[in-house]
Image (cartoon, rainbow, N blue to C red; front, side, top):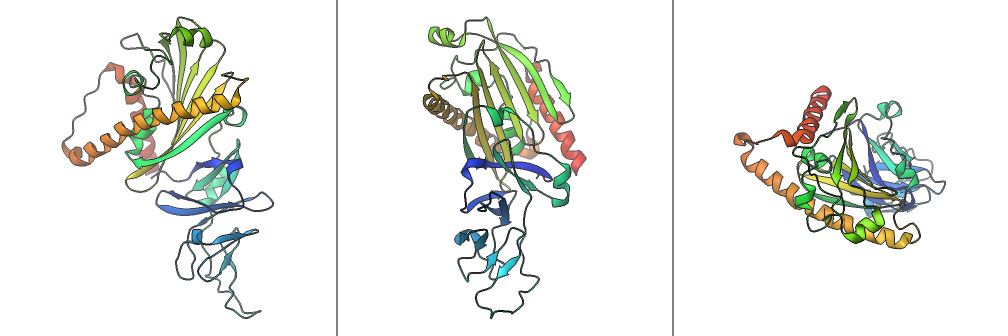
Length: 328
């Protein structure tokens, strides 16, 4: 499990003065926004009788346990116990874990790990998240974290896994194998390649009839993959944020952004992108879940065959596993 990193929770505008719950790396966490706009993240537990704080409610800038009314501030300290007399001291051990959180690029982020390190480590900066229209949805399912993190930038799976959703929209790889112009960076992997424009007549009228469609891939260690499709005057950008939920489950948050696609009809653009994105992720999940089941059954004697066309996947795995070894 990859700690001492920042993880995406939700768009900033979605976090209100109400309880939001998430499980991250086996930790149950609640989030809420105080009336002054500051974000609070606490473990989802009252230290009185060890029940979930998420069963309670928010009172201004505090969370109130729904069992006996104990109140906690942003630091996780209990500041009120209704059953005590005025002036009675609250036990210093009446405290729960709090987490570093921040608003960044219009999204809420949480730091999982050693909180003292949070000030020296920054969230992944993707400026388009702050500038472009987007739609997103989070999915929790059983899968291998490494395979899930890799799936978006795997170039050859699109023509097969997504043959019924993407179809010809993003073009097809005609080279065998293609030149992906890969670079290994300190914080990930990046590459650029071209897809032959095999779009329908309608797609070519709107997105352009150039011979090739430029495609950029990027992985930001440890949790965000990027697929950028550049048409003549329009850009489609897909981000996938992945994190471990528990020993078996991962969460994939797919964020689809765009520039100059149906700009005069923003509501339709969002509807179109949301519907298309949902179908794409559902198709990926089928294969990622299948992969985990086979790994669990045959991990000790499993042999995987790779070829030159697997350059992106092999480079990603080499980088990923090296990073994991460095943090052990």
